[in-house]
Amino acid sequence: MKFSFLKKNKEKINISVPEGPALSVSKAKDEEIYYERADYQDNVYDLDDCFDTKSKVERILESLEVFEKKYLQALHKYHFLKLFNRAALKNKNYNELTLQLDKQINRFKKSYDELKKKTDVLKYLQDVADAELEQLLLKINALFDFCRDINKNLTSYQQTYFPRLKIASYSICNDMAYSEIENLTKAVNQMIDEFKTIREAYDFIVYNSGELIINTVNAFVTGLENSNNPQYKEYDLKYFLASDFVMVLNFSEWVDLFTKFLYIKRLAKDVELFDYLNFKNHYQELEKRYVIMLIYNEMTRK
Image (cartoon, rainbow, N blue to C red):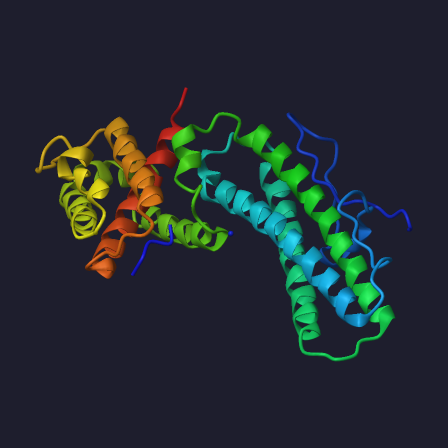
C-alpha cells in the first residue's frame, strides 16, 4: 500500500470574538443560522452564457468543485483548532463563542451535504427545469459567502485564543484531511481521559514510549530500504535517531523526530511498505502521543 500522506440584503451571522468581557452574545437558534442570510460578494457564478441544459449543469458542477476546496480548507482549520482547544487562552466568553462556532460549522456542513446530494443527481438527469438550475446556483453562491464568514470567524477566534501556537503544532496537521484530524482529536482526548491530568499523561508518554519509537522507525526504515529508489535508502535508523536504543526523548527530540517523519512521508509518497498495517498502527499511536506532548507544551508556555 502506498502512502497517502481535506438580491436581498439579509443579516449576516458573524462570531465576534472580543478581547475582554462583552455586554452580550447573540442567542441565535440553530435554525436561524442559515447560509442564505449571507450577502453575495465575489465568486458569484451565473448561467448567462449557458444556452442549453448540459452547459448549465457543467457550470453548476464546476462552481461546486471550486467551492469544495474552500469548504475543506475551512473545516481543516476548524478541526485543527478543536484538536488544540486545551491550549486556548480562554476568557469568560470562550465557551459560549466556541459553542456558537460549533453550531455554525454544523449548519455549514449540513447545508453543503444537502446541496451535494441535489447536484449529484444532475449527472443522471436528461432534462432539468431552468428555474431549478438557477436555484441550485444561487445556493452555491450563497455557500461561498457563508464560507467567507466562517473563515473570518475562525481567523478572529484563532487570533484571540490561539495567538502563539508553535510551528510544530501547525505542521503535524498540514497533510491531513479534516476527517483525519477529527479522528486524531477523539483518540487524543480518549488517552488524556485515562489519566487524572494531562501532565500525568505527558509524563507517562515521556517515560514509556522508547520501544514504540524504535518499532515505528524500524518499520518506516524497512519500507524505505525495500523501495526501488536508492535515494530513500540513505534515510536509515541513524537518520532518525542518535541510537538504536531509546529510553527517553526530550520534547525537542520528539519534535525533531516528527519533523523528519513528515518530511520523508511527503518525499516518499510512492514507497510501498512491506508491512503497511504494522507501520500504520505504530505510527498512529506515536502520533497521538506526540500531539499530547504538543498540547501540553502549548498549555505550559510562559
